[in-house]
Image (cartoon, rainbow, N blue to C red; front, side, top):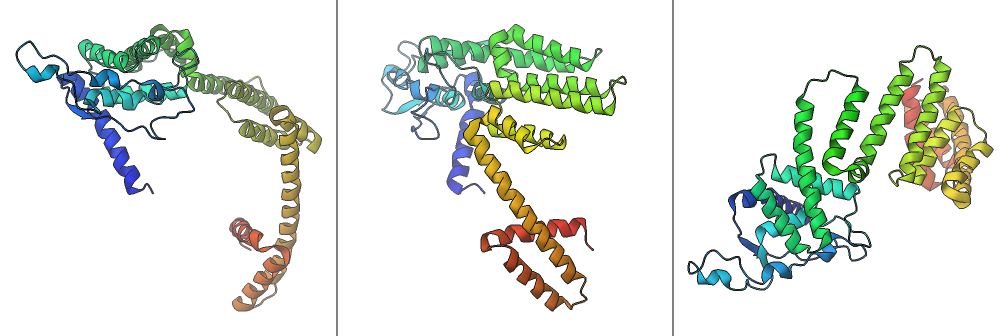
Length: 353
């Protein structure tokens, strides 16, 4: 359950971001305190927008409201006070990563920030408000990085509006062809490089799904052939996600081993598969874990057989439970007994006799 401090922090962030659209649409430049850099807002070990954002660019002077109307408008703001809408856009963009050349990294962090921005701004943002928003970004992040972040935000916003219209149109083609039209739409607005990297996970999973459906609906394939092709298809997907850093090696190895075991693979084949993904040390560690797991299963099978004898002996409930507890003590050490009880409950649920 979130702590009170975390809850208050979340609500405050939501209030700032939720108010961003209001400030942009209304032109309000009310002031607020500059966010305090913390582990949550600024990672000093990573080149992010948070680590390069220049708050001093907002604190030098207040925006002019017209000569002679308000002499205080041209006076410097108090230290640490910045426009509220600058805090709002900073809250959305702060986690976006920059590469060694100062370019925005088009990864899942960027995609999440863009989605957060679209949700906060809503679908009715005017061109003037978007221009003001981009001006804030370039002020806080001057140079190529700010220009790129501002451009990508506008491109993504326009894409999401176009996507909403696209999804409202009737589908009069095969699902796979319809999906490729969506991919083309993304590329038209975002460019192929950024689009393909932002939506790498969706594209990989989407094309995998359509290929899987094609296999299952192919009447010319036997069940065995379908299973073999599905296994090869899943391995191809995992290899792609692994290469893109979108799948953890341990997860990829576990899925491959599961498929190999279902096919009756030997321990040598399993070791070889793990070695290819995790390296020799990782493969050795998992092989040792397998041996320990095999020992556990052997002991549990022995316990379960002995337990069955107790259950069938016609004892009263008190004596029966006492003897089962005694068996647990005989077969397992104190650290293993909790697991043995859970496993015993699971097995008993499957076979209550």
